[in-house]
Length: 445
Image 1 (spheres, rainbow, N blue to C red):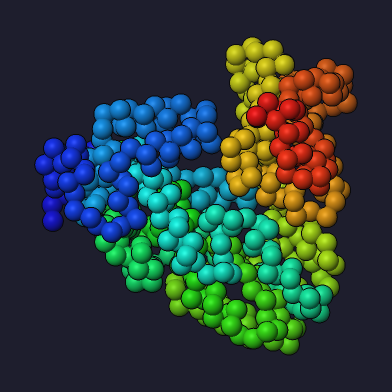
Image 2: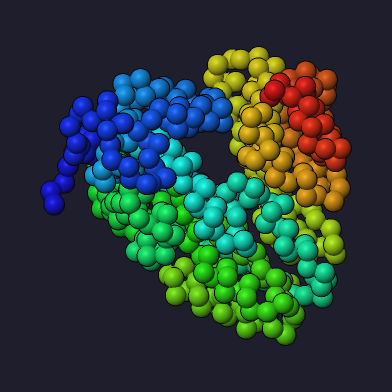
């Protein structure tokens, strides 16, 4: 088959079909709503709410919908002949200095896959294993930890934590497609997934090239959903070993609790199953713990019946805030902006990361992921100290005691700063109290 210009839409229906979606024969597909405006507009609004600063991409989506291109794409998808453009390959810097390969589709196909993700969520939720609900409705930390903490013998068990290296990009596409639930494997959904995942093309440095193994392409809208479904047979297999074994997975993060004498055999079994899928264990993020020793899962540390923040969670939040402060120092020096503008920018961007946007705060923010699970406020105090110091650094370029006089605590509060300790105690009183405090103090309301 000859290559086509990736900037052009692959069309296999008359243009008039897009304006006559009602004449399409019923496909009995979860993707049928693609030929109506509602799911596209909902996806656009969701993106706008989560990413209010990404004005260029929001504009791309709006122009696509205004031109009616979304309905033409929907018709092609239901007809089984839409070929997505090659995604753009990129690299992200990780905390440990390594780089992570990520992919991003052009606006038309990125919005398409955002819509498809929303439409496939119910089928995916029905097919996912009860031991892994990552990236699905109700699938946060509380859900992932629920079965683990319900184990009344947890204090007597050893813990195994395994992390899969570069999980999304390492998944064998043919194996995944063969294991998809029927709702995703058949019809227009299956055709779209197989076409997109089997396409080896990527855009690299402006040229279309063979990208080699891409897996389910980290960074693309459907990758989290597919990652949740891929290992569901392993979930069931390990969970069924016996009543003495407690198991949970969140995408690429696995934890197994078992009597100490049985854990080595279970570890070998899980590693063997992952290797059979072509997946590699990330040894630097994997460990075992004897009964009574602390173990980490999903950014938390469990120790002696208490849940706190894992050390890596502290490091990540501190590193991100330091990077933000440094970038704002450079911006302030270039633009000669006043200190209060740098403080305001630091606080606003930090608040969005920690507390999210109002309409989706319960699912997608740092605060509502971590705070409800923590045993106390001790973990938040050093983070608050660090955030205040970096806010002052953004304004002054220094980290000395003098910066407290230049940017007093009242100035931080005026800019919208909300200490994590205060947010934690509000969460203790209930989600409504927490949400009211966040809205009142940060302006994210």
